[in-house]
Image 1 (cartoon, helix red, strand yellow):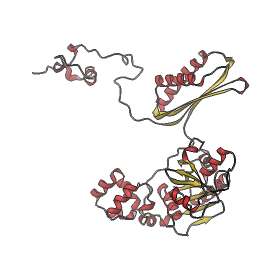
Image 2 (cartoon, rainbow, N blue to C red):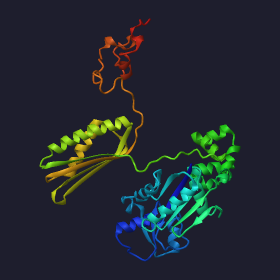
Image 3 (spheres, helix red, strand yellow):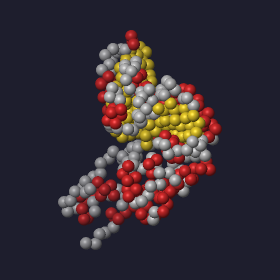
Image 4 (cartoon, one colour):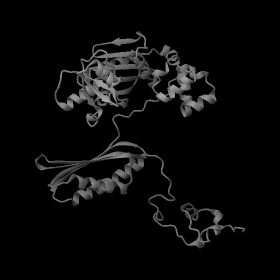
Length: 401
């Protein structure tokens, strides 16, 4: 399958401008993250490049204005992904200004990129860059290599609003084999430095490594990079946008004048959401509770989690806290709950019975006479030993002392 990797230049600059409402200065403005240029205004000094140190950029333009990433990180950043989903349904979000698209053929890809450029330029950015190849890794690598000055002019389509870099299928194996480590975007700087010290400067040279040595230095990804060096792109495309979400909404007629009906509805929603998450094997990382009343009054509260969470009891406690946090002080005409950023949960320790079993909540007796003979001499039984008492057939055998 052909894949397109897309990058929208000027996205963060436009985002900052939209947050300000107007352009406040004619001087060049740089969006800086971790001391490096993340994006900048247009026109800009010709030597400015994304990723260069701000100190170096400032030296060539003393009057430039610096805007920290923290000033825009709270702004909504899904507009580019949303525009991508309007032209093609197979979207994998990568960064706020970039995404992967799953395509049928490269001709369709060129049409999709042209249509996307009409939607986003100049509304969301200045220029759209696209790399097309048979695979996700190669699509991004060919664009990075071209923009870094290491690409060829063959397969390039330049327009005022967008540029397409296409890697022909018959050249993909050669391209990946000869790809410098600088453009192998799955390796971090530490891993690249280790490989350079081992005398490896191109992706294809990984094939010359001893399999044991390759496994030692690259770990679990050794076979993945071996396949890339052979011209095979095994990286799958995962459709992640639009994100999965769970949403419920209700209206109160007449409007609720106390918190009792709100609490009752949140109890129902907590049970329903917990059941849904349990069936899907997922957890939510964000809960958004909204309520509205007359005269345009609105109340909003949000809770974010560092890891996917679920469970009816936990959801009830969190929703009760959100309701209290909103501080509703007038008749409530309606309420909405949204759980988004749904992700798969890590495996939990299995219980002896499911939650619906009649013995699920029963505590294991601590009577020493029911334990294994070696645990009866005043030693407190561990949880494992107490659970084994229910089914371990060895408990009924006589122990020879």
